[in-house]
Length: 157
Image 1 (cartoon, one colour):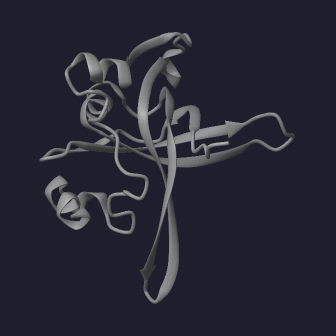
Image 2: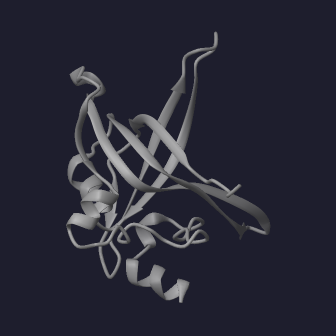
């Protein structure tokens, strides 16, 4: 049986997405998921990164508080900071859908806007625009504000 690395999240954005444009367009945002089934409500925060047309969609249509559906794969990277080994986990999204409205708008749960593999293929991207090799995570240990797409590409070469 083949290995599977697939993540599906439905949650709310913690802040507005951050877009970086260059040779590769990338967008980062965080999604909160809350488990309300137990007596004590718990919230998990997930770091999400997407590329190409998906990144452009996220930057244009997603805002803090918006409910989203994210599908992708989990990726991790080890790095060293102040002499201590750290591990960063991130969801590399290949499909993002805005659902409902902002939390305070009380929107429904139907899909509002989405872009995924089919839209990338229709736009001539062949579904490859937002896909990266399994070990690619852009500068997990650095501030996103310091990342440029050109620098990310240069480090991967």
